[in-house]
Image (cartoon, rainbow, N blue to C red; front, top):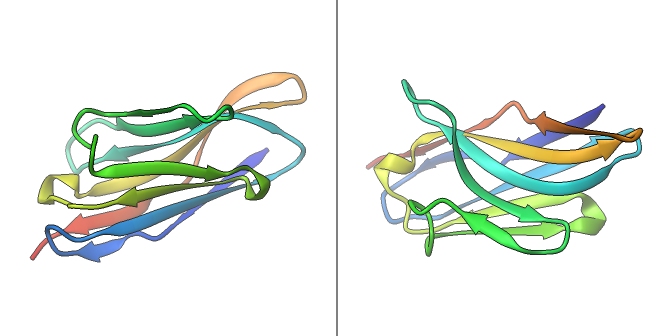
Length: 119
């Protein structure tokens, strides 16, 4: 299995910043892509950002210019730097990894970390 552990969530005022981290661990695996999704209360889970093993990134339109995803491949860790946060960014943020393990490609998910943007 591949385990994903998120950290860095919390309460922040509008306009503030937070950095989320997600570390992957477990039995031998090869990560193809890592990313972040979020789910606000009453809404479906939505894509936020992703980064592939080769480096290209992709962002939801709602966070472009405000969020930056990066990755430390040596540590199997992905980061999400969030700036200019808005109340509508409030959600549980989930880390996702698309990885190959024992020849099988699968999606893996973390348990989520709460981000609340409020004054």
